Image (cartoon, one colour):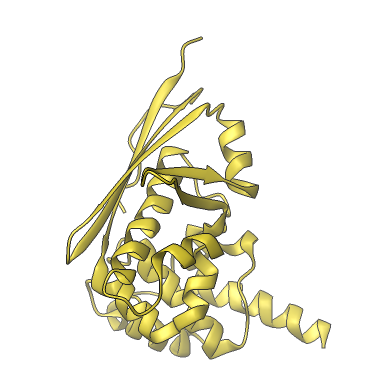
Length: 84
Length: 138
């Protein structure tokens, strides 16, 4: 899943560095992602993974690293699976 | 006890917002802006992207002024409202209003500006903030 997330970040994160050089836990904001870019990233992740980030996840740390995003999507996907 | 001032500022590139409007359309608008904000900003007009950009900057500046500390926040809970004379103010709802109450905020003042390339907003909050230090520069 990390590779898919990395591809979405590459397209929408508008980082100042190549996402390929970043560790899974590297801080995306420190890598140049703006708050507005994080909105685009959120919408693109919702499209890619078929989830919707609820208000409780609309916070900086949800999108601060590839690993944090993976954990958030895994949690939302599991909730979707339980609901269906 | 006299109140303390807290200031927040944000800068947004208008073309980034124009690109988001083009790419995500109504979904982008609906996740970030109230229906009244969206109605004022319009759709597909030359001014729309600048107006949306200024309002996004205002929401981010408000979060900084309120010293959000990464609390969860729906952007629509921070609304820019424009009066008949054209002055704009920040109106808080839900989690944003709760955060303001926790910080003893008694007043907010907003100023926005935009040029062709960039939009910016400054928000000053009067409150009972109990921490010192600088905000994030993001």
